[in-house]
Structure formats: structure tokens, C-alpha cells
Amino acid sequence: MNGDNKKKLESESSSSPSLWSRLRSALGHVGLFLTLMIYTAVGGMVFNELESPAEVSLLQELQTSVLKERRFLIHTIVNHTINSGHDHSEQFHNLTSFVSHKLGEYEEVVQEAVRGGVTLPLNPNTPVPMPARWNFLQAVFFASTVLTTIGYGNIVPATFGGRAFCILFALVGIPLTLSVIASMGHIFATAVSSLHARMRKHLPPAPAVFLSVNTAARRSLTAAAAVVFLFLYLAAGAGLFMLWEEDWSFFEGFYFCFVTMTTIGFGDLVPKKPKYMLLCTLYILVGLALTSTIIELVRRQYAQSWRRLQALSGPLADTLRRLGESAGGGIDVTALQKMLTIVSVPRRVQSGESGAKERREWEEAMAAVLRDIASSPKKQPPPVVQIVIYESSV
Image 1 (tube, rainbow, N blue to C red):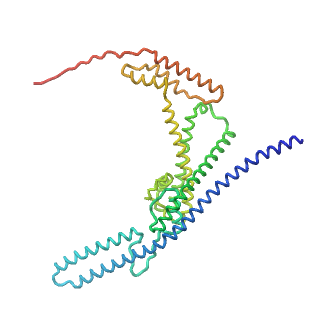
Image 2: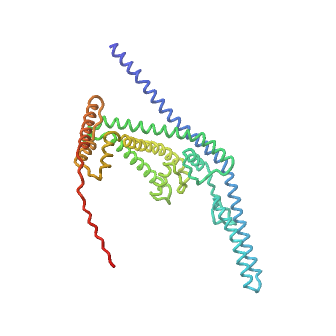
Image 3: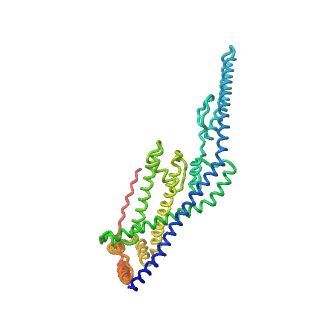
């Protein structure tokens, strides 16, 4: 009885460090994520305090300039029309050239105001609320685009203080964001591995045709499944943005999600609803973690395929080179079919002595086929008789 209790206590003590390490790891991931959220919110507050007053002042100045030029243009046209004498042709010519000049100046002011964010047309008798682009939610969204290096470019800091703070904010925040994305990617990979292990325990054994697929093929299927999952995530985001933005189609939402998750960030499509900015920021952060993980998985698959191509050396590569060089003299198709049959046979990768034995047998079979190809006599091509007929006319 005492022995059983002792074993039980030992098992509990051995399992408790594992549980504590998992809990500590989870708390570390959550703490890192919360740190990034707080850092982004504080950065948004600072950007808003630095840029919002400057933007309001600029909008007021541009709006006043447009209204002033409009009043001056109307006043000039009216005075020249009233004071025009009996010489209508000369007065009309002078009025046309003068109005064209003043209209060009007015259009330049209007274009500058539109670029600055002033909404037209303006009513000189009714005050129009100026659509300031800088607010707290928009500033937080801008801070998140800085930290994730997306950079849409729809709003940018214009003051010296805002630009200087942007440099410091990015220098500290971008490494923090990359750490959070790597942490989230680790969580996703661990969750997928745990789910796969549990499914293997509860699901029936796979058919023999699936077991015969080698490791490289299984990795390729895994990479393809990851890409499909990424496209499903982008499609889900496209559906949400199509509901949030009334003028967006599903394809435009999918295009925005793809450009965002790959950190391309053209800025031609940007969400305009401020109340959804925080949710959009969270969606982008999770999507970046997924995208970086899946892109890394696909990159490893490319690298492995490239290494396999580079590893094509030795007797097989020499034989293929000789076959290519002797193509003019004919190729032993039967021997080539034997070699391709041996190469294309799927092999199960096993560990231990059985796996080593199978690899030796496969290598011996390949060596035998290569010797057969090397020793097979080359077939001489049949003689070709060329008949050239020259036709001439005088």
C-alpha cells in the first residue's frame, strides 16, 4: 500500500512541472499579446494628440481659402458684367480671359483643399463639419499598420513631432510585433500538432494506399492543406468586410485581405468605418500569424524540393546525362522504363533495421537497372537517304 502511494506521489510530482511549464508558457504568450495591444493603444493616443490639432488647423485654412477664392471669383464676374459698356465684343473678350485666369486659380485652390481632406461643395452661409481623418480609433489602426509594416498610406503623420515619434515607435514596436506573431504561430503549430495526435488516436488506421505515400508527398499535402486553410481565412475576412463596407464586393474584400496579410499594403482599398477598426486590427494580427506560419511551411517545402533536386548526383545523374548525350544515337526505352519504374515506386519510410534493409534493397535494385542501362548496346540509327531535287526555271 505504501509502495502504491509512493508511486502515485512520484507520478503527480513528475506531472506537476509539466503542467506548470505549460501554464507559464501560456501566460507568457498572453502577456506578450497584451503588451502589444497596450503599446498600440498608447501609440494611437500619442499620434492622435500630435496630428489631430494640426489636421484641424489645416482643414480650417483650406476651407477658408476655398470660400475666399469663390467669393472673389463671383464678385469679379458680377462687376465686369455690370460695368461692361456698349462695346460688347471687346468687353466679352476681356471678361472671358480674366474669368479663365481667375477660374484656374480657384481650381488650384480646390484641388489643394481636396488633397488636404476638405469635402466639397462648401456652403459659405452654413458651417460644414470638417471630416477629420485623425481620431483615436483611426490612430490606433494607423499604429497597427506601422507595427505590422503594412503601411497603407491613406493617412500619414505630417508634423515634425508625429514623424519623429513614428520613428521611435516603429523601432521599438516592430520587434515586439514580430515576437507576438512568432508566438502566435507557435501556438497555432502546437494546436495543430495536438489535434493531429488526438485524431490519430481516435480515428481508425489509414488504408494501405495512404501508408505507402512517402514523407515528401505527405509534406506536400500538408503544405497544400495549409494554403487552402489560409484562403478560407481570407474568404471569411472578405465576407466580414463585405458586410462592414457597403461599397465593397466579395472580391474587393478578398483582395484587401490578401494584400494586407502578405504585408504588401497598396492602400488602394482601406476600411472606412471607425467602429470596426479595433476588430479589423485583431483580425489582421491573427491573420499575419497564420500567413507567416503557412508561408514558412511552403518555403520549407520549396527548399526541400530544391535540395532533392541538388542531391540528384552519382550513378543516376551520370546515366541520365549519358542518355541525354546519346539521344542522337537512340535511347534504350525498355531500360529507361525499368529505371523510371524503380524510381517512381512509393516507399514507406521506416526506422530501425527494417528501414535500413528496405533502403539497401532499393539501392541494389537501382544499381542493377543502372548497370543494365550502361551495358546495353546502343542502337545505331537507320541510315537516312536524303534526296534533294533542285528546280530551276529560265
